[in-house]
Figure 1: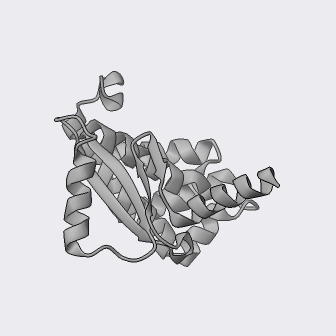
Figure 2 (figure 1 turned 45 degrees about the horizontal axis):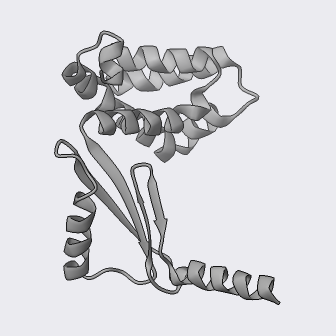
Amino acid sequence: MAAPARFGLKVRYFSTTVVKPVSKLVMSILKDPKFYGVVNNPHIKRNIKQKTVNDVLLKQKISPIMLNLVNLLAENGRLRQTPDVATAFSKIMSAHRGEVLCSVTTAQPLDEANLSELKSALTGFLKKSETLKLETKTDPSILGGMIVSIGDKYADMSTKTKIQKLSKLINEAV
């Protein structure tokens, strides 16, 4: 059973009334320096933070569910963790939709042919009901090869790691 359904909420309602407003809330916190300063300042009292945040959110016409979430975070002194809460919530909803996050790091950007071949190879690790959500990164320090993280699986096939392992073996033998 999906996490939102466990709490008696219909997923469609939950995802449309909470997911988009959470993203909107996080963006408003990160974009407005004054708002961000109020939320992250430990010297401002919780009730003042709560009132300030409520005023901002009411102007943005945020749903009552979102307002309750923010009030809960404010009451518990957790407004600074709002981006982390939004990230965790996005992961839960992504898992519910059957999306599997895959991160691939290479030394150089992949061309379209290699990218499509990689996608088809990675799709083989997924169940039929799951969809691949691929994120590619470049890191020249790995020298070559790639580092793949898909779901709970991790494979480091980088040249840098191979060189480190070989160097360790040589040093241990001497």
